[in-house]
Image: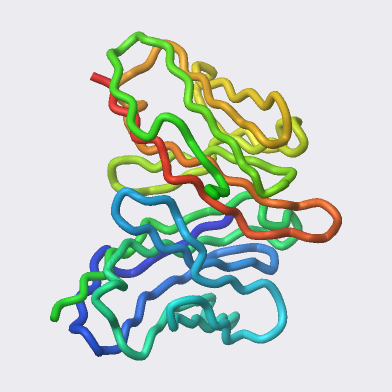
Length: 115
Length: 115
């Protein structure tokens, strides 16, 4: 069975600092990996996804993530945090052999950005 | 134009009642989903329909019954509501046929409170 672990339910950074949100996954087959963002009282918006090919994936709003198979990780980074980045971030995995049909989510990381 | 829309956005009801949540997508996708987000923000898939056919049915009480009148709509009916059903319910859609395999697009969520 697939699973996702997000280390740290809360991450606090200062505006302009590096953002690093950690995600490790478990999957018996090659995975598809995703990061979604949820702003307060909003739905989930896709930041970026990894399917195949280049392991460094660039997404919206300056975020990027690197798929590291040997570490079973897909950490999300942004060089310089902005106040508008404050939100809940979810890492998710689905099985390549079933496409994107069933997402298994991590428990989320709340990003707090201080001035 | 809203891609995936859910109604209502908020729903407060008493234990034992029956309620429905409606979802519509105008993206032309062939697959729709219901996810449940609990009070700890944990997201879990409940159901998935592909072209009106049920393809994923997780371990969900049979008080929950999804209905898909056409591929653009997936409604969720809940009988005999219980306190533990209080959560945010997200509808999503994606395209999985013809090799397209798009990511899931989420609605804004329906916050259900059972009192």
